[in-house]
Length: 511
Ligand code: NAD
Image (tube, rainbow, N blue to C red; front, side, top):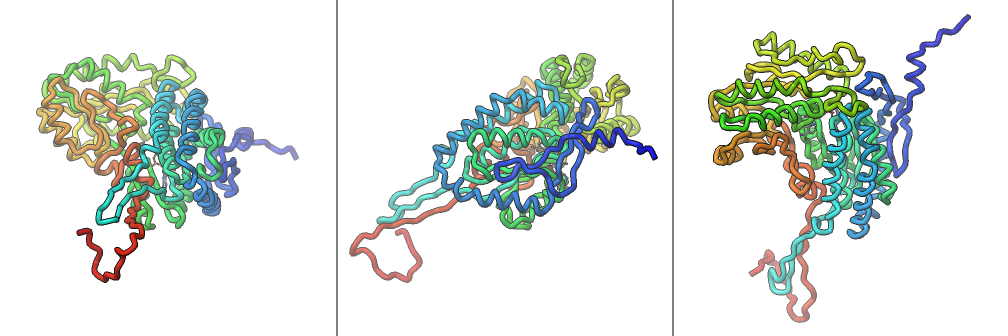
């Protein structure tokens, strides 16, 4: 009997697999569970990624725990030296990392290189660790008594990261975490896992000792084990709001320190006196850059008063010029979405918006690549006359869809932003310094841009939203990152001074 060969199944079987990185070495998955990784520009599966089991996470934590005592005892100058080398290797290999991001996330090379540049800023910040870990000293708090404060690492800490910044978000975390003397376990997104292993190889080349940086690939099984493992001291998370809430609640219930950054719905207020061209350029750049798959993307333009008509006209005039295409096309400015499922969900909001009474000014489903390509493409979309009750306003769409809400006054615009459950980023476009200052004072959002549409803080400030965009007390990276990855110890000291010692059962006083 002739045996039939299922060609696509055989091809899929033969694809390479992205594994874990444990104890300073690649580790093939042993769970028997894995997921597909796609090239979003072609729609083809290109790899598999292993999904860690509970036992594999336990092995990774054990390796990280074993590495901790020697790493925390490594001198600050040696740690700094290694971090400088990590920084330089990431810089040298930025094009290879960018190629991995394009291949699995779909973002175009210029955008991928921008992601790496912002990640590098965080590594540069971590290179200043000797200065950042300085404690405090108070001499003679009582006669012959001094008090000083130290910052010490927590132990094994973990980072769980989203698909949309597969290199930068890990760099938000691991530079500071290991600079502070912790050992770090990364659980990257299963949608674009390859950059994590490339980074692990660079860290090894830079001299990061075995077990100090670990990668476990996987899904909820790996995440849940990290959240309940008694030897994981802290968890940094970036992702969607429902998962961020779950991570925060579960991690803190298990006694861990947790910072969990969630989703967003970022508003850009445009006042009547704004420079229309500048505002339209900003709305298009921040709405459609990275196909809208940025947590700091502008989702909603809030047009105040008479600015609405000329602004919508200026934005729509720019849309036909946005070049959508694969990252292999040097002209392409916007790539595909990450998966077919996500692309279809984003597209469904256009249908819903129309049914709910909004005006579709530009429809991304009309783009030829949406119709004809196997890739996960969607053109740029603009929806006008949106109201706060519509799904396209209420939900985080996370795609190349810009919505416009028209309001009569600044007060209405402010109320809209402050009533929104998310509070990640926002921007105001105006020529009026007083109005901008008032907005910065009034708005309940963690990161504010004044004529700057994507106000991602530089690495020596910290990144974080308010409300449903962040669960926890400390923001990510920068000074808050150092605080998150260390705990303070206060030492009160006195040296023997013959003749001054006596028995005193009273509570110690300084006066
Ligand atoms: P996601 O929440 O689906 O996944 C994030 C991480 O959580 C991944 O590693 C994933 O494997 C894991 N995960 C997913 N479901 C889980 C579950 N049920 N239990 C345990 N772990 C689970 O997010 P995503 O789709 O990868 O990323 C996009 C989202 O991230 C958007 O909402 C975006 O706004 C948000 N984001 C926020 C920021 C920020 O700084 N606030 C930055 C980037 C992305």
